[in-house]
Every structure is written in C-alpha cells, then in structure tokens.
Amino acid sequence: MDCDRVRMNTEEGDRLSSLSDDLITKILSYIETKHAVKTSILSSRWKNTWKSITHLDLSSDDITSSTSLNQFTRVLSSRNNEIDLFSLKLSVHGGYRPEFVKTVVNYAFSLNVQKMTIIWLDEMPITIPSSLLMSRSLKDLTLIGCAGIYNQSKIKLSFYLPSLTTLYLENVLLDNEKSGGLFSKCLNLKNITLSNCDINDPYPFNDGFFNPLNHMSEIDLSLVNDHNPLISHSEFSNILNHNNEIELSSVKLSVGRYKQAFVKTVVDYAFSHNVQKMTIIWVDAWHFEIPNFLITSQSLKDLTLIGCSRYDSKIKSSFDLPALTTLHLENFMLSNKNPNECGGVFFKCLNLKNLTLFNCYIDNPKHLVCPSEFSKLTPETGLFSSANVVVPHLKNLIVYNCGGHIEIYAPKLSSLMYEVSCYENFYANSLSCLEKVDFFMCPLEDDGDYVVEILQQFHNVKYLTLGLEILEVESFVDALTNVPSPFGKLTSLKIYPRRLERKKNVKKVKIPKQVRNFLLGASPNATVSIYSREEMKAFKDATSAQRMMAKLHV
Image 1 (cartoon, helix red, strand yellow):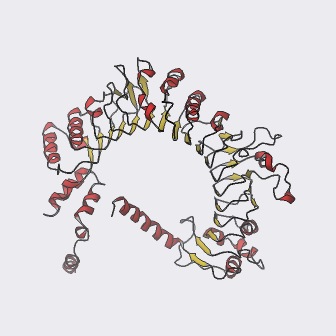
Image 2 (cartoon, rainbow, N blue to C red):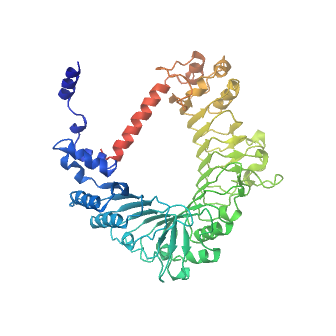
Image 3 (cartoon, one colour):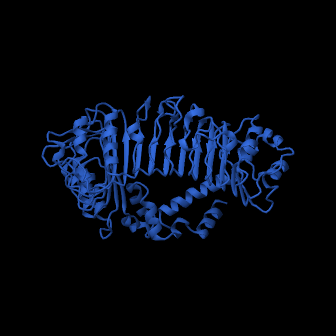
C-alpha cells in the first residue's frame, strides 16, 4: 500500500515545483535566508532558485567563527548580483559581531538595497558603525537597539543617506559630536520615529539637527520614552524651524509620558502651517483631557485622535474645526464640561461628513451636543433634546463598541455602520437619506423588542447587512409576531456572523418565517445573501490566501 501511495504521488507530481520560478522566488523571500539556501539541495532546478531572491533575512546566530563567516561570505557572493536587493533584515545577538554586520551591510549597499532593518538583541552598549549610515540607495531604515538606559546603542556620526524617506530609531542614544546635525544630509526624509531614544547634542538644535523638517510636507514623529524626556521643551521648540513657504499636508504624532507643552508645540506649529490632516496617538498617557488648543483650527480637514482608555481619556470641550470633514475618535469618553451650557462637542463642525466613534463612551447625553442652529428645535420638530450626535451634514457614521446612550440627529446621513457587543441605548432621528446600514450586535435573550425598535428606524434603507447573532435570539423572533415589514425600498439583504466562535457550526442557516417576513415582506424582490459560520471561516481562510498571493504579485 505504501508503494502504491508513493507511486500515486509521483504520478501526480510535486505541486510546488509546478509553480513558476518567479513565484517560487517570491515565496522564498518570505522565509529566513538560511532556509531558502537549503532548498538548493532539493533538485537541479532548485539549485539556483534562491539566488534570485530580493529580500534577505539573516541572523548572527548563523555565524559562530571566522571560518563560518568566510563560508557565509562565499554563499552570499554566490547570489545573482545582477539582481538588485530590495530589503535586508538583520538580527544581531550572541555577542556583537561587527565584522558580520559590516560584511552584510556593505554587500546590501553594493546591490542598491532600499529598505533595511537591523535589530540588536544583546543587552550590551554598542556604537553603531558609520558603515550603516552611508548609502545613496537606502530609502527606509530601522535601527532597534537594546532596551534600558544603560544598554542603548549609540549613534555619533551624521547620517549620509540622501535618498532616505523613512527613519525609525528605537532604544538609541543620538550622541552628536559635530555641528551640522545628525540628519542634515537626509534632505528627502519625510517620516521620523524616535521611540525610547535620548539626545545628547552639545550644539544648538537650530544648527541643523532636524534640518530635514524644513523640507517636509508630511511629518511622522513619535516621541515615546519610558524614562526621561527626550529633550527639553525649549530645545524642542527650536527643532520646528520649518520653511514657511511650504505648507504641511499631514502630521502624525505618537506621544508617551510627555507634558502637554510638547504636544502643544507640534500642534501649534502644524496649525500655523495650515495642516489639513493630523493623527495623534497617546501610547502611555492616562487620566488626561483633550486640551482646547488641540481641537481649534481653521485649516484642518481630517483628524484622528486615539487615546489609551475610554474611561481615562476625555473630551469635554467643543471641536472648533469649521473645515473638518473627517473625524476618527478612539478610546475616549465624550461629555460636556459644563452640564448647564448648551454647546457640545460637534456643534462647530458644520462640514463634518465622516465620523467614526471607536470604543468610545458617551456620557451626559442630554447636553453633549446641541448646536446653536438647532437649539430651538423640539421633539415635535424633529430633534430630541437628548440627542448627543448632532451633525447636520454628516453622510457616513461608524459606531463601534461604544457605550452609553447614543441618539443621532443627522438628516443627511446615507451610510451607517453600527456594531456593539450587546444592547446599548440607540436612537436615530430624521434618517430619510439613509441608504446603507451595517448592523451588528450580540443581544441578550430579553433584548428582542429593543432590536426590533432599532431596525424599524432604518425603514428607508436599500442595502442592509445584519449580524447572524441577532437572528439567533429567540426573543427577537418572538417580538416579530404580527409586525409588518418596514423595508419597502430594500434591494439587498446580507446576513452573516460577526463572531465565528460563538455557536456550533452549521452548513446552512435557516431563517425563521417571522424574520423573513419582517425583513423581506415589503421588498420580496430584494437579493438575499446568507452565510453560516462554516462558510465565513472558509471565506476568511480564502481571503487570507488571496492577500498573500496579492502580496506576492501573482
């Protein structure tokens, strides 16, 4: 039987070998280089396949002596040098190996490498050699030293990387020994991330330490440090000596345990240069309130604020952003600072069209949002006094895992994505323009009546997507008895599970008659797509495979 099985496999052929050489080469680029090299022993066809890979993933663990380093060099040199190298990842541990690092880096630079990542894993202080900082081809550089203030890797010489656009430094001490600045020769640098770094620069910052900022239209700056401030506030203010003739299009700022002054300096600088898009992420900042200066701008059109916890990160002041069209809030508590004042978070954002509330909590709903132009409206005229999401020109709204009492007044809303883990107070008024709704929740057994009330508010939709979890609650099915269908304009209905692990898998979903009549009774010609958990798992696996194939450019 074993012989028959071997013969059958031989007749079917090796599926991997049936792939094209280009595809096999791309696959080998996603594994450690030492394993890619080992495939050369499989057959005569595989002998030279690895030599065309454009990504190298190497480790100093593979080198144990000068003899093995010479062998490694010979293997490396046998790669097809007519093909440029795109990226290099190098992990260094087991004792610092300067010759190994120098050999690999010089080889990569000789083949015009564009992206390089080097990680030092040993807890020992080292000085990063100048050979790592000199290349005409390198566009993306990541250097990660060892954690700890006494083990930081040091950089003492200037970067000579004229093509560099993205720089990420972590656990590195920037110890400048010459005037002119470490980055003064990186004139194309657009994204800088300094994570848990320190700066020891005896020269003034306006002598060129961060001169590349003068040429940036986009800035990505991470100021995250676990022990001491990266630099003093007065020094930091001098960094931002931007060319006033160049306006900023976007700023991304990641902050850790920093005083408000650091954030204010960057934000004021960005607003003074008419920034249009800004993202601020608090990595490690608890119990704080968004200050007014952060949400006051005449130019800003796209704003993303990501806090640490929706119970510790608060927004109590109104957004004074008249040009804002897109807003993403994540991990915040929204409330009014003065419960007796009719103002609100969004009442000055009259051009806001896209709003995302992700893992937020809405507190004090009665007075949270009450824009001046709607303040005289009453429940009879269409605006309930307790409405807390009032945005007159809003078109797209995403509410994900939010708590509290949510009441929406958005008469121009056309698309709503609403997902919560369980029932929350939700009411939407004046949704005559609403065409598309994605509604997901995991209601409790006695939440059926509430779910029906919510769905009835979407009576104008044309495209409706529901979570299967809603239909699996018996109280929801029971609540639909003798309830007419409100969906007279429905053209498409989709139902699929959001939680793949909740219920026992079944191959086909059965929709109760009451549910089908409620959803489709007024639109019997609507297209219907229903997927079980088993089908969604298969779809998920297939999608992952497709993404990998797309990544391989198949």
